[in-house]
Image: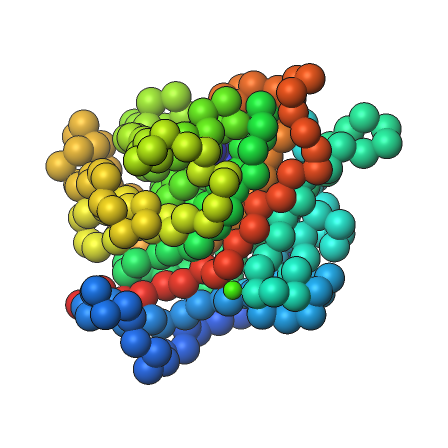
Length: 273
Ligand SMILES: [Ca+2]
């Protein structure tokens, strides 16, 4: 489970004015005509180029991120770059000195939706100690500290459970090791790292539903917070990262192969009306 205890240092790019989501006329899939695309990053661009700085900040550092993680997050193209085939690739590496590097990217102060379908199509990495995630934090963070700021984990996977993905909410009274959470098993029990899958939340006032490949598997509402505040009726920013090691996934071992790549085809936000 993610927490954000050590995110108080915001990148300089986060000081830029918030971007306004641009409405488009792009149609949603025919299977769901109630969803209208309002923002996306399709990660089109030359191989080796940077993710669009109008959308993404890099959070850097090697302080364990509140979970005793091992990686040093960098803004290097060795750890995050477009592949020239319409994908963002976040690469976790073992460096010559035995340390690990990776990338963590956020849309804070740039793209901060409130409600809608927040979706990404991702081929996750694999291996013991590898921890990919697509998640969100309340835009009031860090002025409002975690967990009061709220956290919506759209997809997390830990390498020792290749066939499972997890969806969670963290907020006041339900955080850390005690979130509102559930998981979805691959229908055939195969590894989610084998190919691309679509991970989404349908986020409405007082209600969030998680889905994988369009199959809803979990809903939490304001009635589920054990009497604690529902802190999800506000804008959130999105985060993509690959952690290496940590209290929850455990640590790389002799079976872990590096480098590992998380390949993201797109991140999209749809309105749901
Ligand atoms: Ca793409």
